[in-house]
Length: 117
Image: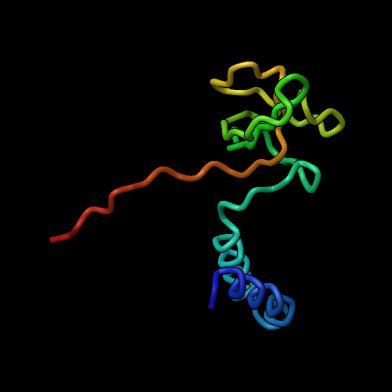
């Protein structure tokens, strides 16, 4: 079973599970969220709800249109009426000529697990 198939199966069963066990429904939601982790969310579909720094995909506009997209970090400031100017870009050259087209939560850094003896 692929991750996508597992996610779909959990999403399909969630309404039934929710009727019988709130605890299991919560576990299903955590599992679905984990399987979705790392997926890009187009800004046309949804914008962040909270002010945080996110990983974003930038697309060139104007003179830079047609260049390859690039990944960067940007902080969302929350005005959903004006998508382009609600992002503070981090370490991005020519940011005026770029637009966020998708975003996702930042991944957590790798953490070495200590071995118990």
